[in-house]
Amino acid sequence: MAEITIYNPLKGRPETIDIKFTDKNTTWFDDCVNDHDIHMITDACGGLLISENGFDYPILVDGKSRADIDYSKLNALELKGLYIENP
Image (cartoon, rainbow, N blue to C red; front, side, top):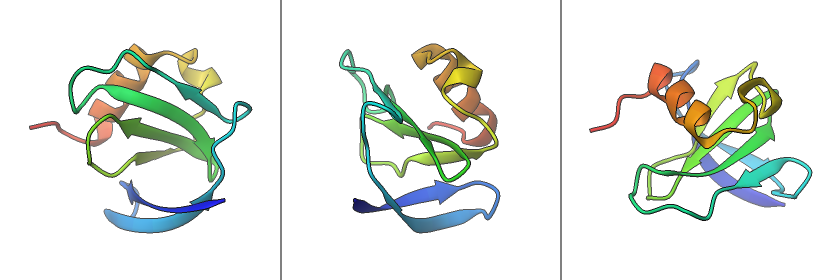
C-alpha cells in the first residue's frame, strides 16, 4: 500500500489517498516520451486515476473506470483534458 497525493477535480484540490497498484487495477503504458504522456490508469476510490509521466499529480475522475475508456491511453488523455488543461 502506498500513500500518494492526487488532484481531485470534484473537490478542486489535492488530497492524499492510500492505494496499491496491481495488475488487477492498473494498466501501464511504457511508451511515454513527454511529461504529459499518460503513464498509467488505475481503478481507485470509485473512479479512474490518470497518471502522467511527469511530476504533476495524478487526476482522479469520479465515476469512471478503465473499462469505461476501453483501457485506452488516448481515451484517458481525452478524459483528463475535460477536467485539467495542460500548459
